[in-house]
Structures are given as C-alpha cells and as structure tokens.
Image (cartoon, rainbow, N blue to C red; front, top):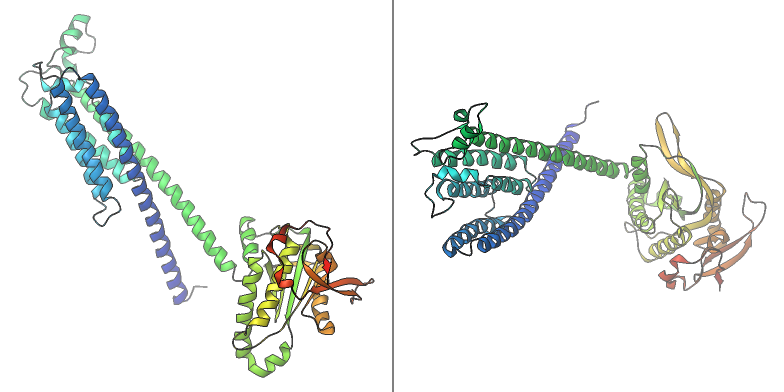
Length: 469
C-alpha cells in the first residue's frame, strides 16, 4: 500500500537530511586530510631545503635560489592552510593550489638550468631525478579523500610535465631521440646518441606522463571505492538509527537494539532478574472523573516520567498494561546490580509521584519488587512478536503490588531482592501469606530515611543482610 503524502514528505526530508549529513562528513574529512597533507608537505620542504643548502654550500647564490623556491612553495601551502574552513574557502580553492604547485614546479623545470656554469640545452634537466616531485603533489592531493582532486592533480601533472618538456626543446636546432638509436644498437651508437646533450627522449617523457596519469587514475579509483564504502556504512548506521528510533517507540530501546543486532529474533533465556510491577491506585475512579481524554493526558505524563527513571536505572519496560508498568532489570541486557537498580528506580518513582502532579492530577502508585529466575524472550504468532518475561518471579511482583492496598504501603519488596543489598534502610513488614504460594515470605518496604541511601551501595555484595528499622 502506498504511503500517504505526509509520510512520503517525511521520508524525502529524511533522505535529504541524510545526504546532507554524508556531504558534511566527507567535507570535514577532505579539510582534515588537506590540513594534514599541507603540514607533511611543509616538513618535506624543510628537509629538502636543508639538504639542498648543505649540498650547495660551495655555491651560496645557488643555495639561496633553492631556498627562495622552497619558500614560495611553502608560502602556497601556508596560505591554503589558512583559507581552509574559513569564509573564503570555496570548492575550487583546493584545485587552484594544486594547479599552482604544479605550474610553479613545471616553470622551474622548463627555465632553470642544472648548473649555471655549464652551457647545456635545457632538455638535459629531464635526465635529473626531478619527475618524482609530481608524485609528491599527487600524494598531497590524495590526503583530501577526494577522487576529483586526485584526478585533477594527475591531469595537471601530465600537462605541466609535457608542457615544460615542449618549452625546453622548442629552440633546439638538432635533437636526438630513441628512433636515432634504433632497436638493436651497438655500444658506440648508444653512447653517442644517449649521452649527447641533444638527446631529448620524447618517448620517455610520454611514458613518464602516462605513468603519472595511470597512478592518478588508480588512486582516484581507490578514493572513490573508499568513499563508496564509507557512504554505505554511514547509510547503514543511519538506517539502523532510524529503525531503532521508530522501533523503540513500540518496544524498549534495549530490546530494539538487541533485536536489530540479532536480525529480529531474541532467543529465550533463563536468568535471575529483578522485576518491578507498578500500578496506579484508584485508577478506575479517576477514569470516571476526568474522562478518556483527560486520562490519556495523565497517563502520557506519568508514563513519560516513569520511563525516564526506569531507563536511567538500566531497566527495560516490557509492558504497558492499562495504567500498569512491568519493568525488568538484567534482561535482556545483563546488569550485575539489577536488584539495586530496581530498588533505586522504585524509590525514585515513589518520591516522584508524591512530589508532583501529572497533567494537573495527583496520583498514587503501588509498586511490587521481586528478584528470582525468569524466562525472557520473544513470543507471538501470526507474524507478530512481543518481548516478555514469564515465571513465578513475575507473578510474585504483581501480587506484591496488589498487597500494598491491603497493607497500606506504597512499595513492597521481597526478601529475595533485599538479600542482594546492604546499607539500604528497609523496614520489615513480616512474614506474609501470598496468594499462589504455599509458604509465607518475608516482605519489606522502605524505611523512613530510605531516600538517604548512598549511591556508594550500588555494588553491594550478594548475600548480605538488609538492615531493619
């Protein structure tokens, strides 16, 4: 069945927002990578500058020229670094600075002789190990995590290298190339041509340009693949978060997370857990007094507040039943302090209900708490499932909630819970008969100063006795 226009509009908005989030993530990654690359580039220039100065110590003028060149390149990087992330930053700025780097390098190759004291054609510089500098610029571009910038750096490098070569040989009256050497030369022929100042090696320059272009394409493909993989991961995480948010409106968030990770199934487990059962006193009378609309407002306000408390204490609400709440501690998510968490949640709920109104209505809650073995898992039929807990422990928590009315208490706690805790001020009610049980059980409630229980007792050792006032 097709969705309503409103639903489609919401989905479109979510899709646009997701794409915007992805664009922002990749934009931040590009900026971070460029900053890192510029820092590395600056370090490399400093190291090269030091090496060139040391090796040209006998020719101070030449050393100064190298330092000036490296200073200009360093300046490009510093200016670019300052622009990144500012109001002056534009999508084309990174392309501009890559082009400037390559243009400046190519200009030097095309115009600067290897040695000022030697009269040789400018084409001789192409025999020096100058070509790898283009790969350094390509590597800097790769830090941007942008396939487009890598391909642009490759294209500019190819154009700059071949352009510098064409400029360097433009005025040569005579040039030798590989075709002059032939396919099977003798030693004398090879030496004569290859070591001649007029040997330009056009095919070698074309091969070098081709290698640079191929490497740029390969790195660009790697960048594209990496971005695609990251994008899929982001989309999967966004989808998971969306499902969790939507699913969490109908089942507890902890259950939703487990269901998503387990592909929709929760295998039944048998485990000790603490069960909290809470109900509102005189709810039927209240419904008759304020009507359906009013009771819904009251319940929503009450459930919102109580849900926050239970979640904060690592509990999971497995069921809303009318005005009743069934919460579990230690299933499905394990918590060794489940008894303490359940007791603290009950104490906070009791204090909350006594201290405030809900949608303008004062309420009174009755709470039963019991610790014992439960069976928890997904049950259902007809394609629908519900996470729930079963067992005598659940039934006893519900019985204790009901017995509050008979005993005039707000909270009843089974001894199976209090035995896990020490330092809590419980008040013993005594041994009481409970419907459905053959033997009477010890029951407790909170002492008058129970609210002063210290959070330091959250990890109390099991088996210690509860204090009785």
